[in-house]
Length: 406
Image 1 (cartoon, one colour):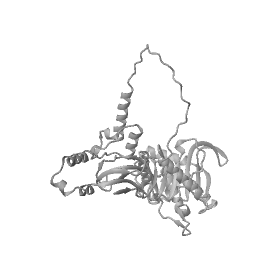
Image 2: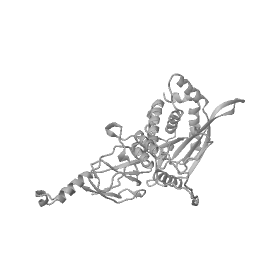
Image 3: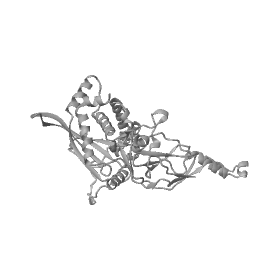
Image 4: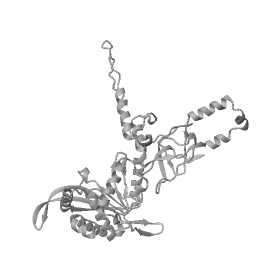
């Protein structure tokens, strides 16, 4: 039977082939992972739909293939058995017995390991089949791979003795060449989405300055009561209140039907910087959640994003996106690119202590810049200014923010 690439996520149209998890001739059980692919949002394993033998692959590693492409040919065990003649069943020959033994020996033990763990092994030249898993049910963990890497390095780092009598002849050095890195996987998918967004959406970016002095003081008070809540959680809740008042920014433009769809639920995407590139997990129904719940869910999703363990549901369905680049430092402002088909995105930048004039007095305040990109087909600049003014008001006065939650 043909095993094809199916849609494993919302709006998925293609995927990159990362690696093969089996070899031609291997026997696999139903649901055993056989191929690892990379979509624009995640790394995923394609399972075997049925038990059988892997006959041949129809794709190459590194190839980008559309949904519906045949990945490999799987010869089902039933079809193999049906090929056996009646005479073979009555008096099996030595050749058929040997063939049966070979088939059994080709049965592949299922290796339990996450795609991220397999990636670590591949990048460090570790054959994951030789690794003994210490996790539940023999699952291979990241730590198992790292131990194997250290062990391998110790074997390589054996001192080499050079005979002092030998004369070393200098060899001609080849010309210096540039290094290359593969342009595929998540990086390639990010590039496609960014180009599509910029060519589809007429971006307009508005900048604003926010005084976060009172918010910092409020968070300090909470810490004294052993209550740690990130500033981003306050930002997200403030955004949700603004989206309720300005629903045009929690919308999608349906050009085919010539309507702007105003979405009731606030599913906020949080841009996370990972080794493989940017990924955006989604905190759902923010409008019905407390700041503490938002903080806990944000922390959980960020940890999963960094470990490359997010599910499809956790990275799809966003209605608005934020990017908090402040902790990275050195950012006065930026023009963030909108996550199509959303209509807006807000970036929070570095906080600095600056002299500010209040009531004709110069005082030192903690100031933060924000930038908001929006789809100018859907909203006008004046609406964006009113939106950021309201957002600034809620962030600058945490008591006012708390009042809105009552």
